[in-house]
Structure formats: C-alpha cells, structure tokens
Length: 439
Image (cartoon, rainbow, N blue to C red; front, top):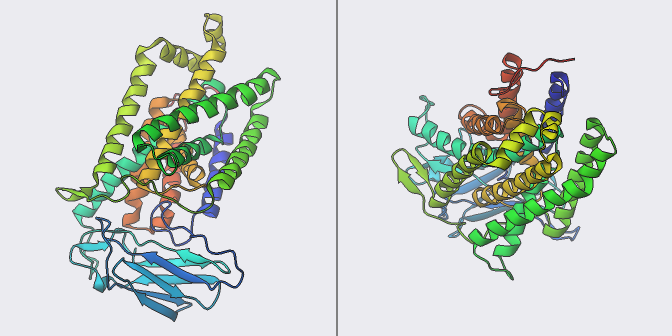
C-alpha cells in the first residue's frame, strides 16, 4: 500500500467526518436527534435535560433559543432538569445555557460549551441537545486554563483513547495479515454494542458483564463468518485490494442499514451503570464505571500483547504479518491464522463497542464515527503494527479531548485527524512503523 494511497484515504475519511459530524455537538457522539412522532403536523421543538457531573438534575436553569440573533423563546428547567422550547419551524438555531444559574463548582466542560451553534431541527422533529457540564468555576475574564481542567481532559482522553485502541487492534491485525482496509470494521463495534443492549434489557435482562461477554462471541462469529463467506473466496479468485476495499465499503453500508432497521435511529442507554456518583480523585473526577472500563481496556491491550509475544498463534500472526509467503513456506497454516485474526478483531471491536456505549450512548452510527479515529490511530501508530495501533489510538484520544481547551468540541475529531496528517508528513511510516521500499 503506497503512501500516496493512504494519503488519499485519509483525505476521504476527513471529508466524511466533516459530513457526519453532528452540528452543535459538545462532545463526540452526545448531541443527537431525538426521534419525533411520524405526524407531519407535529410542531418543531428543541429540548433536553441539564444534569451536573454527578448526573443529578439541575432545576431553575434558563435555556434560550435564538435564530440569526433574534430570540425565539426560552425555558427554565424543572425538578427533573428537563426543558423544552417550541420553535416556529424547521431550521438552524443557537441554544444557550445561562451559566449564571449553575451551582457553585459546576461549569461547562469545554470553553464556550454553554452555547450550541447550528442546532438543526427538521420538519416535525423534536431536536435533543445535551450541555456537557463538569467541575470548575465559570471563567469571567478568561484568565488562563485551569490546571484541574487540563488534568480532567487528560483522564478523559486516556479513557477515550483506550477504547479506540482495543477496537483498532483488530483493524491493524487484519491489515497486517491480509493487506485489506476493512471499512466495515466499525460495524463490528456497533454490533457488539447493540447485542449487549438487547441481551441486557428486557426481555433478556442479563447482567451487563455477561451480555458483554456474549457480545464478544457474537462479534467474533460475525467477523469470522464474513472472512469465511466473503473475503476468503474473493482472495481465491484473485480479487485486487482496490476491489476488496470497495466491497468493504458496500459491506459497511449493508451492515449499518441492517442495524438501523433492527435497532432504530434513537440513541439508547444500558440499564446498568447509567447513573453513578463520580469519585473525586484530587483535581479530577471519574465515575467507578469509567475507571473500571479504562482499566479493563488496558488489561485487554496487555493481554493481546502477551498473546502476540508468548503464544504459538501470536508468533504465527507476527510471521504472517512480516512475510505471508515465507510463513506459508515454513509450514504455517496462513488461512487458519487469518481466520483467527478476524475472530479476534471482531471480538475486540465488540467489547470496545460495549465500553463506548457505556460511556456515551448506543446508536446505529457509533461504529462508523469511531472508525475514523480507529483509522487515524492505526495509521499514526504504524500500519500493521498492533502496538502502534494502541499507541496511536491513545495519542488520538488525548488530542481529541485536549483540543476542546481552545476549539469547539464538535471539531475534536477533526483535530485528531489533523495531528495524524502532520505526523505522517514528518514520519510517513508512523510512530512504530518500519520504512519500506516503494517499487
């Protein structure tokens, strides 16, 4: 795969990111449309719920909606923290939270996070928005960046990067063993999250831990089935990498729309661990759920590293990654190794989807949005390197969160991809990649 082709792919991904990024979002994948009734006569509204960092509702907070500088209406949150403002019709609006009404020690998590620009409301829809609030004080004079806020974003970035890392490992291993750019890998993430949701809610009502394990099994089975039923026959027929890349895009669209039909368009939450009181650890706050997810993600990465270094199948994976023909000549069953890589990658993507759903929300586009960052982590860390994917993903996670110190959070993904491009201009093979001769 030439550097020029990867640069083209990165440009396509960046363009797609700008198209799918939700207007007015304050953190990745939290500002989302809420499905409205099917009636064409339904009035347009904008609504939401204001909660503090401990997920407790805030009462008496004023929300104002404007359009082109003209006030459309306002509302005050009730005892449940809920508010709703009727609109004169569809269009793009600005929603502002009155920070003066916030309790002491509570402030918008991102600078300027009290203002959501470009909130698009479709005909007959009720558009939901979420103001992300964290600990701190509202800055009156813009006197520097609080150290506590930087540390909080570092913690959030590590958590986010760890989730990206465990999903990106499979993507990197698949590329290393088959040279295939699996554009459908993001759908494996969504399949894992959706499977765990159906198993952990009525009528399944399984504990989320058991549901997550079963989701890994389903994710691995789907990925293995795709390898046996689609990719292996295509390889035997001599399909080129470009043709297989186009097939991967088509498979991604197919799986995404199937998930949309089964799951629906609304964002959902797992019943368990959705509301927790955050722990205060010095200047940072983190819920027990997020801490455990971060630790589990690192434990999984360590487990994958040990597997690659200390087991026979791991050694075979690295051999096929280095030189497929030589590995086959040495007696390694290459097709079996590739199948194991797909199953492992699908299982890791599935558990990553469960973690992402626990920390954010479950929705049909979640895997595709995360795929952009997975690609960034894989390319930044080094193509085909599992360790590079882990390191690159952590860097992407940190950059996406820390960028909200200076820029709107809706651009967090864009800055992460921009850092990837800059690093590749300096070191084209990535952080842990190896230089290869071209031609």
